[in-house]
Length: 279
Image (cartoon, rainbow, N blue to C red; front, side, top):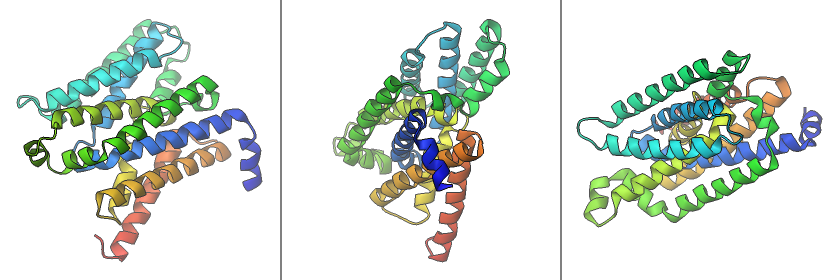
């Protein structure tokens, strides 16, 4: 198996896919802890549906680089979700359901009406559950992912203490002068960027698992915010790398394999946590 993996890694497109996968896993795990603790876990699911709708529009418009449309639309919808979630008449969970279901339906409708593809079902399935486009990445796309990942990690590190304060007690943070709305906005924008990066890896329906599972697994063993975040990041990278290698070796779907490995890790961490009396 090791020899077979080494043989595959000799190909540049496999190395590109692994690099991008590891970077996406690292970025997605950083804010997963924050989303779980703020009880806003499904924002990833909602934004991924928005990204699907934007991707459908870019397909209809025959854009050569769908990132130019998908990223701005997803960021804008992240801001809208934040704003509507703070509206007393439309609460956070209702806002996510409204925007995500609407975007998913409109995206599929547009793909049906305007699609020129002979394999519409295959295109939709690959977008929803991840596609083989991870193995056809161009060097420019890899560099774009690297740059965006550096920005995401740097923003998280730079605003770490503010994110910590906003995560645990918004009212106290606001009372001591922290601009809560600004940092919530930063969190929403970072999540939007992560969602767009992860779409090709695991697809729009599975992307929230990449954000949530490592955080939940780390919480089985650790209690401090920093420890959970570090453990979540390490676990996410390991699970994603393992899932991608298993997918390459056995020809299984990339996104589903990664999520399956994440589920297995969650079960293992849960069992260890119970045995150690952490539950």
